[in-house]
Image (cartoon, rainbow, N blue to C red):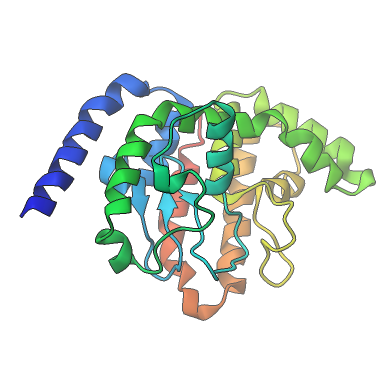
Length: 249
């Protein structure tokens, strides 16, 4: 009973703090809506079929000890970002390299989870800033991973999209959603699905938002087709496509 009361208090605090921290028309709020359904209880989440939790408004991945996946582990990068901002941490989190749980059950019954929930509530503005900061230096990284003969095309597509309505939202959200595409481990059968792959698949700078949505859907369908059957990724297609549809101006 006491445990349930504490959880209620945490969620109540989160629901009352949240509106003052993010404006509903902001990119960060849209990402929070996309990743967490704008529901504060989803700031800590463990997807069925995955062996790691996803944390914060951006569902940053954090691997438990011994877990090695192909997906970018973004929560430690967020923690590093907070340290550069001189943020105060719970004592246990200051030097915690790995997620301290090995299962959903462990996470749900750990005192660390409640502390982390509160910490994530109070760092919502920093999470938003971290998500936005990832776009600032992404273009040189994308160019470095692009064959020289295709770099001009990448630049044209990138700026056509960025300068279009919803352009920054599309770039920031997809970068947070499916990564930048430069990590060779983030592949199934040598085919990636990140921001780089979508931009290179785009053919035209006319109506770049619609072209981006079409190409992203094509790559995500290919991802599901190439994925290990035991992951059951087909169940995510509808949600992924709904998210991409928010990119329409």
